[in-house]
Image (cartoon, rainbow, N blue to C red; front, side):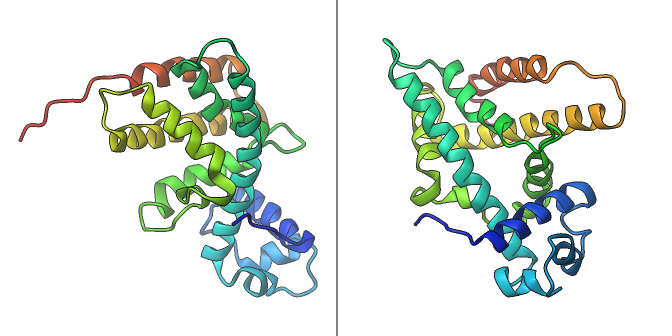
Length: 214
């Protein structure tokens, strides 16, 4: 089922995402998010989403729907090509689509949020909206299925595990690039970093399965 949010909920989602990215997912009081979003009721997050975990789920649902539209458009462009998309092109759809989720400074607060989610909250069992194949993640799962077909020698489960780790690396690159620009550090262009990450991912995803030690 496609998730629909009211304007007041979207304001809370975007404010929560920004503050989580700046101060940490566990470091921001929910009433601070409500006040920063211009809500008269400082319990607005609890009212709309029930809890911090509910807000985390809402952020992921809102962004996965946005990303799915971008990925759907990119997949449609590939489908119009004369030949089937190769693995590099499919990885570009998966990773480069995330460059479009940026704020008015050109920064990527969703990437900052996701790095924290993937390293802290997902391992503890907090699910992501993209875990379900229907609704707002159909393009994502169609893309993952296509990537799996390009890697027949690697078990599908391992392909998904590798992609999650590679996506974490891509998101960490965005965070590092953002912080370097914001705080005056030296960095290469985002386009250069992103292109190199695609080549790194292409090599890593294709590595033969290691022999188990038993």
